[in-house]
Length: 423
Image (cartoon, rainbow, N blue to C red; front, side, top):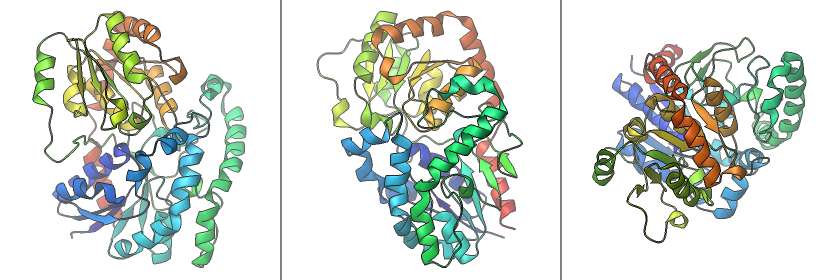
């Protein structure tokens, strides 16, 4: 029987695109799909033939506010700011907005920062499935992620489970206070408080899907019970039907594969000197370059650019990355997924949130080099590109990893699991 799925998500395009991919997959299987998210994404969602339901907060203004983006991408405090002072601040409004859409749903599928989703589901007695978009959500002692706000913690990875049990215990105590507003709302609704709305209690008792590839992380015995790793659900169109700029296609065909420099869909609003340093790095390395600047006018480059450099706002990664020699990016999980699937090696300049952990994982895979943001200078980037493109092992491992990922179908696995979960 056809079912009605409500998908809730908030954040950048990296947070939206997997839900569009799965929503399209569910619709193709004959089901009704509503995506509840920020108003700024209405046109994009409806353009894909999916139902849209507005839910606060609207991230549009947030992404375009320089001070908010500066605080959001602070390596130490960015995640606390995003969670505690933005998404959790609006949890009551999110609940109010999600409630009418949830009443009509047969199954609700939540996003990690949609903190109202479990509250709405519990209040209505609805089944819901939680989603992890990146391995950083899993505080495993056996495969410990690089915690947001602690980019240097990777050096202690070798200390083993005893260290990480203590570390995650302390981390949970710190983060517990971030969820006070969720528990305040629960009390107003007559629901019992939960211990940690931001960490363990954001996972559903009905099931969990990990929308990333096994090459990035494999299930551990201390992950949430019944977690299913589906593979990445890919979607990367800026607008429905939007393809690659013909001028970019001609540039790609006119010479050797370039290095692609991009900051994804959120760090691009806090680019700093990334693009200027990247142009000089490409010159020093003797590479052609493609720079994706986004729509932030502050990223526009003045002066005459070399003929070996092509600048555009956006290009579908699935079209562009396989035609590159390598990619240089910020390490968001959506960008990382496309870079892995392309079979090309990469340099990652992580900023905050899931990015340091994603960078550490692809570096351990042998497909990447990592440069910390405060060390991103043209000379360093050029030297790392020399290693990345000069040592055959990186390209070979990148091709091997892409081959393993090609065996996964993230959309199909996610859709089939959710359909079974309707019950």
